[in-house]
Length: 518
Image (cartoon, rainbow, N blue to C red; front, side, top):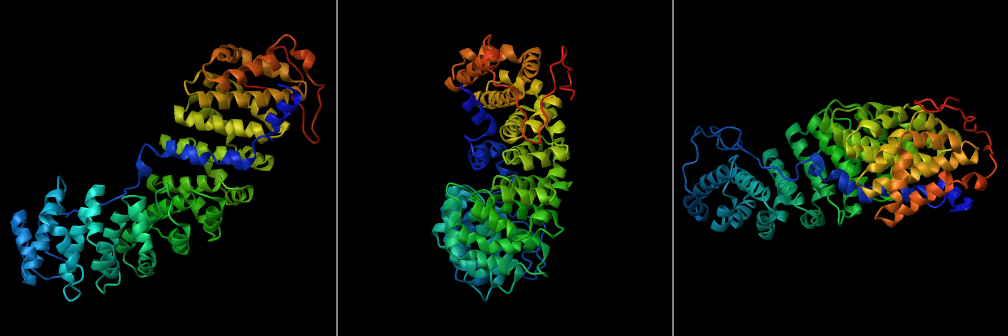
């Protein structure tokens, strides 16, 4: 590997920041596997108590539990008497609202779905509409097959009409049902979007909207923004952005949670999508939420911020200028490991930027905490921290790399050379190579080499020369040949300082364990 290649590796000319920040596409999958985004895709409306009014829309003193069998329910629903229809539909809803093991499939087989869909059109009987809508909501909360049973009977357009109901309870239940349909996956989400449901849901969000309806509406909106492969048509969800920006100022935890989830989905894409979100002016408030004590709010807020910094330098600067980096040291010490991991991932996308952005990371005192994660964090967080450090070494100045070595980066990097994940090993080798290359440019490579050797890094690199992965052994071999071989000194270029940048310090017989002393 000649000097030109080494300089290219150091100065990151082979990888532009756009390429480095695109790690979201592959990395996001791994980041998000564990808890399905920590957000419920579907929700059943479960009766809170066995004794309840028959409907909030109908005065009735009867509080008796369900006494009808499934077959009796079906017979009642096909009866022409609307009073009997109502009682049967309500009994159906109660069975489907049982907390454990509701007989959804059995009720579908009996044929309740087409009857419930039919009842949605009975505008003169909002109580019946409400019960039918609630029953459909709970059927659609089940498996994809159960949701399909609702969709195939033509429920979407009828539910959409109910969004304009004068009875807010009916409109809210319709929102809930549509949210469950949209939450089933990309295909049903797109069916709901294609029906132009979103504008009707947005109309429900007013200053005087009650909090229950507001929670259901924003949750449904987040499901319409959700899922990839494919992502929703951005032009169909873009109209939600001004509303989402306003709702970030809301104090209700559930509203904030689903608003942040929606924003995290909308920022998980192209720079054009990220820009559309930034253009609403919400970034300052979003960054404020990084200080939230509620993990349910903090998790999606951090993810949205992390997605934005995968954008271009200007978009990343918007996040930095809003003060996001100041929140990172605390997030890197968060008791919840998933927060630590995503904070490290976010920082890795900032350090993938230019040297000015890297300096902002340094100024925010993030690196000592990040190096602690690299040394002692859980494995997934260590991997993200390794990316953050290596990206830093790719775009940083020699002064910045010297500071990194001073802070003790070599040892935790070398520790990860024994990882079973070859991608992580490759990232660490790149980082070490970048540091050694920078030291080589100022005649300080021997000091760094001593540090690598003292912490067992050299032994690990030598062992990697026999690694099964071709890229790994090539990287290891290159480092040995360039920086640790007998003829390495002869090939070294003369030391030279970059303009305005300090050199690595002169060799010392004993390098302090804490790093360099400049």
